[in-house]
Image 1 (cartoon, rainbow, N blue to C red):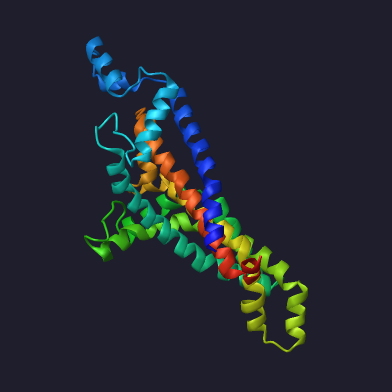
Image 2: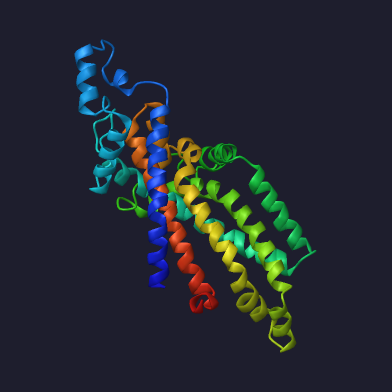
Length: 314
């Protein structure tokens, strides 16, 4: 397993270099000049020249890129052009918020989607399968922003069960933190649980029709052991891949949900930085997202080996 992890890390290095080049290059294509926004309304030429020299914006693009890579290698993602706050500080402040939201959303999605997919495959052609397919179709069709607004109206305004917006760190008040994050995590989990249900059902149907399942049934194994020990274990491979990809998308794509519920997360930080032409923040946040996807891919590879013993011998 150690050799596999080392090999994956070596393969990820050129990928990360290519991603960093794309991040840095595309950021410079964006229209607008952040220095003009920083200089204020007067826009004194001396101030503009000072700011461009301070942030090395007058240097050639390759020189800027190499300087940025050198700083990133030392753990320095730069300083925000708008707030003059280090990007690493902003990441440390915002990333835990989105991680909490993503973990809770993925927990609810796995709790609902995978069991529904198993039941739909085992009870093929029954009302249970019809209900599971209806749930999946609804979850993939209903927009998150609309569902979030409806839940705020019903749960927060009418019933007054949960807070409508805001965020409380778990270290300050764990119970209040869970209450404020419950609705947004449920909103995010609807589409994810729908995708998990559909993929689990397809993988289970393929596994249940395999020869080893028929052999297990012929030997007299109970249906529970056939489904959970034989079929599900082999069907988990594509499900693990989907879970890691969806979790990575949650870290980067919870922008609308964070906006609706007033959550100061990673996605909101990225959107604000793009609108403000804050190059350093955009580069640092996107680089963190890319590293997160690479780490999740590595975690998926390790889980493959733990789930399927044949890969250990290979």
